[in-house]
Length: 115
Image 1: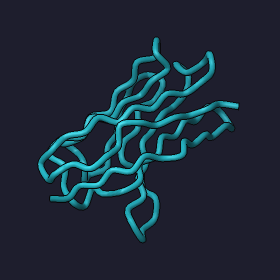
Image 2: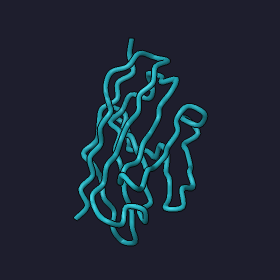
Image 3: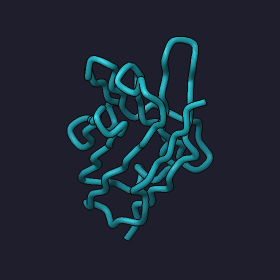
Image 4: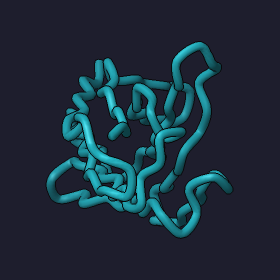
């Protein structure tokens, strides 16, 4: 069983920045396809950004140019650097790890963008 822990959420003013971290247990982290999802209040969960085992990245249109996803396999960690945050970025952010038929989720971390 893979354990996933997110951190780095919080309250930030519009235009500010946050960096989320996701640490996953296991010895094959480098083989996981990783992603960040978010669930705004009252809405469905949506993909924010993904980075596969070859470090290829994809982003939701709403965050392109503002968010950067990265991974450091030596530390079993994935990051999401979020800049120019907007109130509509307010959501619970979840880390996801996929490998073959396995699909793991973290508990989520709250990001609130408000003045």
